[in-house]
Length: 574
Image (cartoon, rainbow, N blue to C red; front, side, top):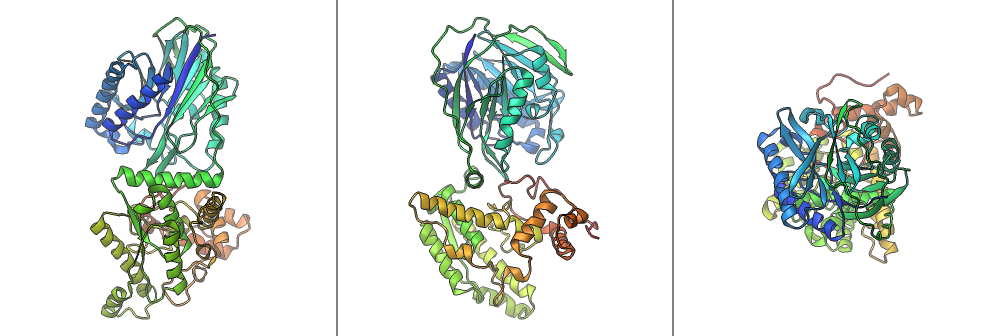
């Protein structure tokens, strides 16, 4: 049985950075070569980063990407890695238009190019807007082993490329992916890849991207599954990694070419003779998937870190209110960037309680980050007095939030910090935020976390710190006290909103599940509460459009996943 050593290069590219991403490909291929790999597989569009969105429509970018892949082939050979068959995803462009492509590089040449066949057009994906579908499958024989390829969605969809490869016959399938993270997605991957391996009759090497890109985060979790469905190797989540595995493969010396399942199979022989027998390395230790809380925390940390780093920010600032939302954002920011890069600002007004100010100071002490006190009462008074807002309710309350937003943006301009918005998904859903106030900022780390999940994560993070003998990062009072915006005397969130546990249950069904009024009623919710919540959600669409991006962790995040008109007369009701 022919042997082959394959490497899965789970890397973190940056969209548009052709130079930097090329250097990454060189570096990780060198590592693969040093590990004795015969094949290395990079993620989907790793040379350009993913998703490139409307950059795909720029002819200059497409041509630059094509030049970069050809240049990479030569540089790999020049650096002594030419004998490693290297699969790299990139943006191609031909007479038919832009292509989501992967190239096979060998001995200084691009020996094959393959274009993605299934173009996803759901959730966060708009690939039919950008790309032209491919209809050719390139099978390469290396050291007597026939290697086929599918690109991301071509693996996730039944039929098509996998069916064609299984019919034609291959000994190994490589699958470059850029599959965005959402909660518990790793539970889906292994069974899916196992089914596809059975359909292909060959092991599948699934390489996934890692890192943050705007509101998306990629978790890696690259895997290699045998033809019998056995999980042979698994890379860790949320970190760059080179997974190297030795394979004993059954080589069928397949010859079938031509039209199969609506696709054209082509075969190219690079080297027909098997490798001389060698002693394989021990099988790599399977990386254990993270717990749900650890997985979500890691996703939020990586999403924030990469958004700041890739956009040139070295530090962040935001309001330290003493509440749970700002506390968990502070802990995330410190884990992502380090305490010296976090600048907390307490901005009390005349309605701010003493415990909120002391909780904010205690949070900064526990985290070891920067902290300053900037009272806003005098700033607010100027607006209130000039516009005669005293006693007007919402108009007076919102001036406080907007004064704080203005203060934070001034510090951002002065000191170069990225301002973080600390709102959660529950607040965004029902419009419980002030535009140009607490909604200001460049990034919103917990935008896709429901309020009840915020509390769960806070308790989990403190428990993890306790296990390690570290200072608990989040003050217990911030977790346990009733939440309040503190914009009027003795204000509580419960004055304006249903209980958060109930509210989040309804929002999960209405926002995540797209369930209508009758469905919510059948689920056991009170009709008056349903009507109240649904109306708040529908009326707040204009606010959500103006909110900063934030890391997606759920099936349906506000933004790319859920696109509703701002101006709409439709209302769920009974």
